[in-house]
Image 1 (cartoon, helix red, strand yellow):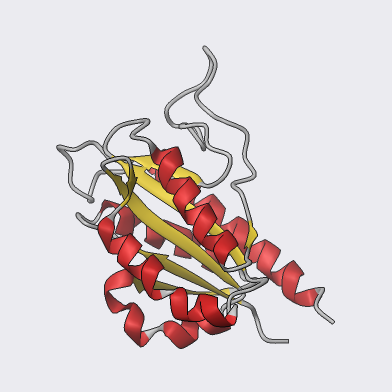
Image 2 (cartoon, rainbow, N blue to C red):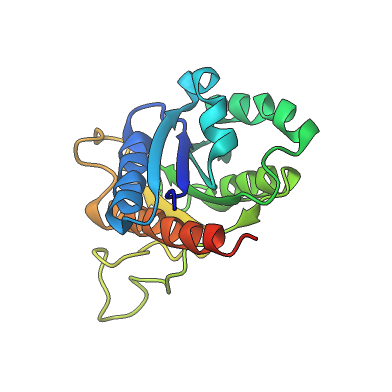
Length: 193
């Protein structure tokens, strides 16, 4: 049986969100249950077939001014041709978000990605982790330190480059998301008639 494909389509303005996308891909590959492909929204016109044939699509973007970046939104609008034919109906969907502050209205960005997936008739996969860093014995080194449920959240200090930000715990949370989506993709494909 062929392994399912997980496409990770992302926009990264300064390189931080690309680091998260690479962590998501690492999780997909580590699962050994699916193959993964990274697709920058800047190159998406060369990858529509990869997206159309993927079992799952994981969306990723930075949060700029309280929502997904314009670069990601251009991609979202380009998907309308797929929407008209419901080409992505019943694919799995998930997302990861990055911003300069710990909150940064990341939830608004996640909702934009969730709504995009629902317009396409996709099936949403959440993070599947309890929140970390939420007690006196917890740490910013915990997985899911920002306490998200619907996707992987990350925070990159505005004065640090992608070689150091986002922190390791956020990259490991993104890796967890990739692993989870790969595992669920394999079960999803195995259950198809």
